[in-house]
Length: 334
Image (cartoon, rainbow, N blue to C red; front, side):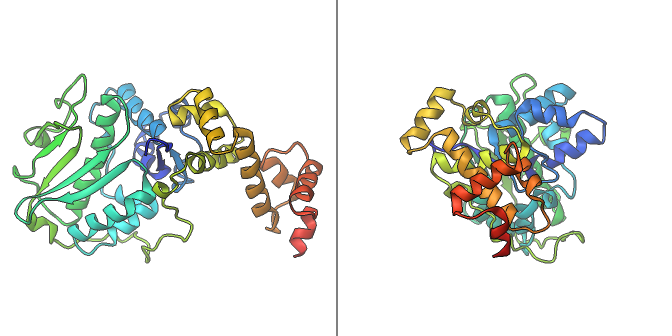
C-alpha cells in the first residue's frame, strides 16, 4: 500500500458539490484549489487523488464554518449518487447484504478505505478505516461522510437509531464533537485507533431496504470498472491520473507528485525504479487515448489531435504512423 498513490472515485464529492452549488458557491474554483481534476458530476467514475478529495471536503467545511458539513451534505439519495459503487451497495436485499456488498466493492471505489462488519451476532459493528496519513480535520470530514452513508443506508431500512448504536470517530481538532447534531452527540466518543465505528442493532441488519425508484434496473457495473486496489504498482496509479490530466489539458509532473505526497525528485526516482519516466507515461497515455478516439468515425482527426495534446493534425498523423505503421484514416478503414 505504501507504493500506491491513494485514489478514490470522483463520485464521492457529488453530495458536497450539490450542496455548494445550491448556495451559489464557486465550486469549480474550490475544486481546482484542492487539486481535484475534471468535473466529478460529469465523470463520477474517474479516479482522483484521495488527498485532493479530503482537502476539498476539509476546506469546504472550514470555508462555510460548518464543522459537521461532511454529514450535513448527505441526503436520502446520497448513496445513489455514488455511481457504480452506490448501485452495487443498494442492490442488497437487506442492510447486512448491502454492507457485505460495500465491503466487496470498496476496492473498486477507493484504494485506501475499507469497510467491514465485525462482531458476534449479539453486538455487530460497522468499522471503516482510512489507511492514509492526513490531518485530523480532513479525516474528521471523511469519517462524517462515511457515517452519513451508513446512516442513509439504515434510513432506507426505516431503522430508528437508539442509544445502543454507539459511534466512535476522530473528533474535530477545534470543535471536538460540539458541531455534531444533538441526536449524535450523546452517542459519539473519540476513537482510540482513528477508526470510524458504528454499533448496529442486530435486528436492523435483517431489515429489508426500501429501494429508491430512481435506481437503475441493473446493479452490474461496466466491465471496465477497474479494481483500483489491484493497480498495485506506482506506475499504474500514476498512469490513471495522467490519463485524466490529458483529458483536462493540464499535464503536470508537480500535480502527480502532489497526489502521491512526494517531491518531484522522489516521484521521478520511483518511476525510474519501475523503468519509466513521467514523459514516457504521458506518451503512452496519449497513444492509448489517440488510438481509441481515432477509430470513432464521428470524431475529426483535428479534434483528436487537440484533445490529446498534439500541436496539429499532421503531428498526430506522424505519431500514429510511428506507432502502428499506418496513418489515422487507414485505421478507420479497418
